[in-house]
Image (cartoon, each protein chain N blue to C red):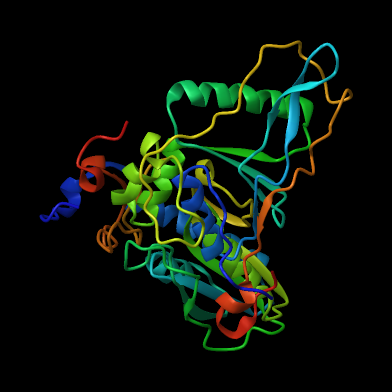
Length: 180
Length: 190
């Protein structure tokens, strides 16, 4: 297996940190591999979609990190509700700022929290870089007002090309006994 | 962290008293004894946090048991830099091939460590592998894992005591308590 570090252009430092945690525990992940349409206009065109930050294939779990301002959290909550309505079989977990803070506390990395969350955490160092990122702009996907559609109109985009990272448990575990 | 560790006064609230823990451990011991009657059982404790729970639980079980200890490195570890990949710091000292194994944990929150351990131990071909945890904090769960024996389901608070630490301290508290936020953050948590 190719174990070279993969450079993933994370949009936020908290995402990069989460990727390192998942790597540490040999949990395979993919970064934004799937995009789910959640809003269509009257012509059936997709006007809003949701691409959860991580997909953990072995757990069949999508993970969305949101360590930003409350206004953006509300927007994300709304999108997540819509996603769950349209795709009830998807297993999606929203990871709030407080969840991330608790994770950092658990791992004794609370001192880094300011650099890894909120506005300061935007524009992360690529995966495999030593970190810690500085502030910078982030493109926010436009949210257009439009007529609510449904998944029967279109579910295109599920296979949008994402960045994949497959942890290499054989290389990470003593005696190589893990069944990844 | 504060330079002056005051132990009991750093605890904002006692979540589980010594008596409550002891009662629950006896209940768990009785259940495990019944479920594994006539089946040789190996208890695998995960250092360091589960040490007090293991010590009490094994004495609450009245069937023959073997015990073994494991230690797994934690993310963050001893430095503030990302710390690579999880490692088994202490492996089992005996084979568990064909054995009934019960993992004894102090707390399950994200499930990441336990998920790793389960995969690792399954590779050692036990006859069965089940989980016993004193504390379950489901609000933090990332990896859903079936817990066979659970002592207490606790709220989403940072707890110490009865083996659980913050900065390697507070493990020797006889109870489980909620650590004052100012101890680890310098300010109350929002």
